[in-house]
Length: 184
Image (tube, rainbow, N blue to C red; front, side, top):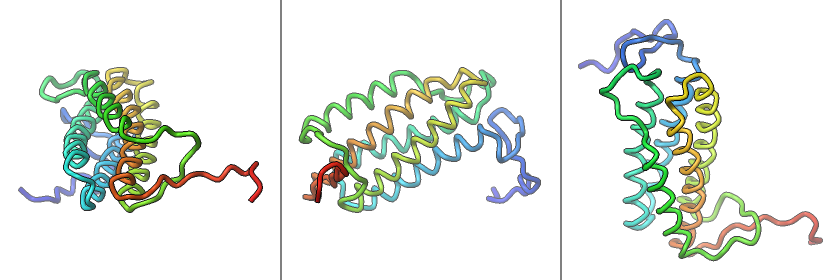
């Protein structure tokens, strides 16, 4: 199978089920942004984030393929595609609770940074939030994707907690935001 098909040379791409749309369609932007988030998680996994966090990130990367497939499928056009389930967000909540239990409570905002893995997890979080905004627009037109929206909302929360966890594992403190009302 060739990697290039030339079918997108005119600015269109295929959706699951055979329909075609423009490459700047909100649906394509949404699942493209999910793919971008997934790629950043691949970068994170090149750092030593420990076996537990790495295992969770692998599962999330696989789940993001489900999210992308769901978003690339308009309506209920295919029974062959795996859709995002509400249980996927519940699993993320459990991971958040577990990781958060080993972190000190937050008393102020933190800045992205610390160790490289933490910085990239913050980057993934912001890309996930962008995907969430795009999927919000998509849900207005196609409500079948609501579980994907919920999943991405939980995932961005998880990525925040994972960034703090990676700093803890690397021996870095959270980078605290300086309150401008405090005189330096």
